[in-house]
Image (cartoon, rainbow, N blue to C red; front, side, top):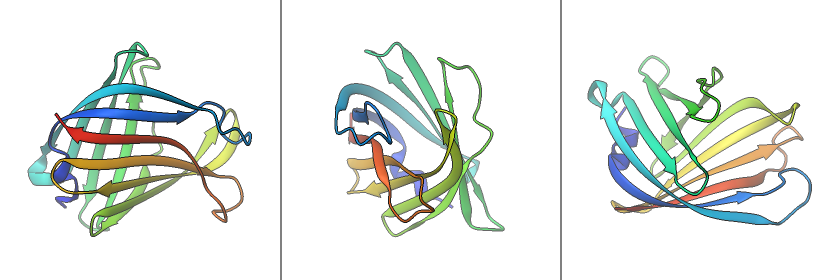
Length: 150
C-alpha cells in the first residue's frame, strides 16, 4: 500500500498535452507546473496539489488504496471546475509501473481512460494519460507529465 511513497515531496513538472485528442492531430502544447505530494494513513492515501502557473488553475489528486482488493482508486479535481471527479481510475503497480483504468467521456463521447505511472528512481517519474475508443485495442496518449524532484 506504499506504492506512491516515491512521490512524496516537491516536483517540477513538464507537461505535454495533445491540443486536439482523438482527431488525428499531432500538435502538442508544452507548459510548466509544480507539484507537492504527501502520504497519509500510513501510505494508504496519497495526495498532491499541482499548480499550472501559465494556465491559471490548480489541480489535486487523491489516491486511496483498498487493502481488500489491493487496488488504488485515483480521483481528480481542478480549481477551474470546482468538483471532485466521482469516477476513479482503478489499478495497481507492478514494480516501478502502475496502470489505472476507467470509463470516461471526452467531449461528450465515451472513452476508456488509462493512466500509466513510471518511476525512474528517487528523483524522476512520469505520468501519462491515454484514451481508447475501440475497446482497448489501440490507445492515444494525450497528456504526459515528466516530474523531476525540486
